[in-house]
Image (tube, rainbow, N blue to C red; front, side, top):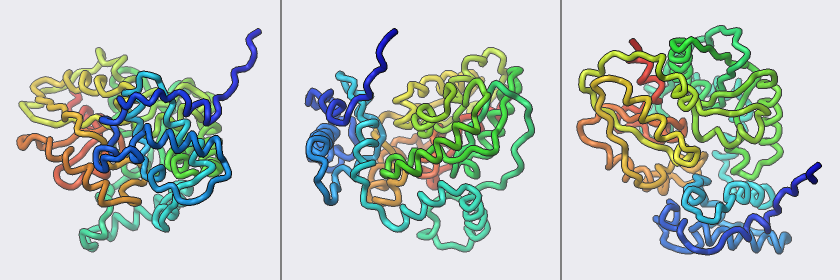
Length: 363
């Protein structure tokens, strides 16, 4: 019998870094600031020091500024587990949060109140000035479709409960076209990723426990938002599968009508690149006849990571600008598989989940 594996300490995780610097060109905050303290290597050095000297207190603004996009992990030759190191460090040295961030984190953990707030926001949205419209107007919603499926559970999430409603229905339509089905367990809630990255480990653990109970008995959880996947993999208790990747495994059963030469642009979120689902999306969209797809070049993180648009709106805007500038002029729609990216990029042109677009052309 093998002995139980020891969970790596923060110091162990930090020591994985060989200080090669290959992560630096991939880090969005380093690209803007051009300083070592705003790079993964610089932050790992700080986190190593905090691990060795845990009594330190104060505001660690360069650590607080990390988006948690995990772009550094995709470039790291030493396979540094940066996100676990960041989450563990922030649990002991929480970022300094604004009152808006604290309010949003509280709402994310209380979904019925969050849904009520978003319903009110939808009603008053036309009356608000542009500066009071931090999010696009939510679309009308309806009850989740009934299902007795016990193999697949679809993750609903928190903000996505309202904003991804149409995408979930589109996914179910596509899934049923392949002869499969899925259920929407009502007791689930936020994945807890925002709370984890804000250092609120207790709140994140409570959300994880609720989801673990909600998904008990299912064979797998299918998740539409690439940004939620990591937190769910740690807490769901069953395998967590990207909804697009699952659909790709059944794609031969899908038939699509012609897009008649329509031109769309595909955005690949940082989290989709990390989990390797970006190519899957392109392959699925390519099955639609007469569709022209432009994949955006990698201009870096769009700035929509977690609560970053709230904590640093100027930098979030600076990160968004090159992404939108890369969209071709003849594209009439931007497709992105992560809820945070879509909410942040919306405005200049329509933004949609690839699943909604695919369902529209289902034959």
